Image 1 (cartoon, rainbow, N blue to C red):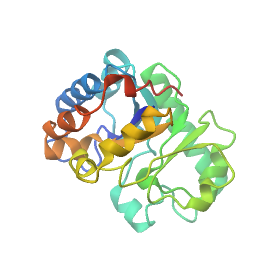
Image 2 (cartoon, rainbow, N blue to C red):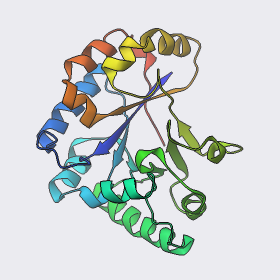
Image 3 (cartoon, helix red, strand yellow):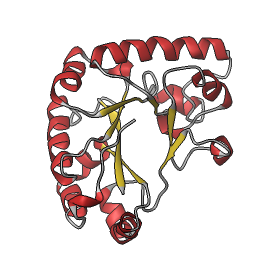
Length: 223
């Protein structure tokens, strides 16, 4: 079965097209495409306005994941994608995670149990800091060091070219056939989208992509 993950709410670079109203349109479109099933949404606490948080609390039933703390693009680039500076201790990381997690959970009014590292990059300090936190699962993707995922079931993984990317690229890569085959045999697949990418290319690509799947192939993303 196919579960859907969406990254980058409310936005990562402040581009003018990535507004709350644009997200409402994306949310409505995606929900229709997957038969109203709940999806996992990566929320960046440090970028949310009061209106963003009220929207999540009152207008959605998404499973909320914490997508880092602020998705600071300059810092991520400087740290090769890592959320936290190399000089920070595990205790300092644990404290930052706790503060942002508590604030996000209280704001949206439901549990936040999934940590979604920006750019899919997570190091040993962050992983260790999460071990005693309420966030019991971690998302991963093409940039995640496979050694981090070895020997644990905490990671929720998506991999290109069939499970991770823009829907126009996924369609060209043959993802419809690949994912349908897995869904038919009951295999668990996590399909990762970025709402900003889909908005940039136009939601008609997402509608076309999902239009090839029977609604019964999708399931709620409960965490």
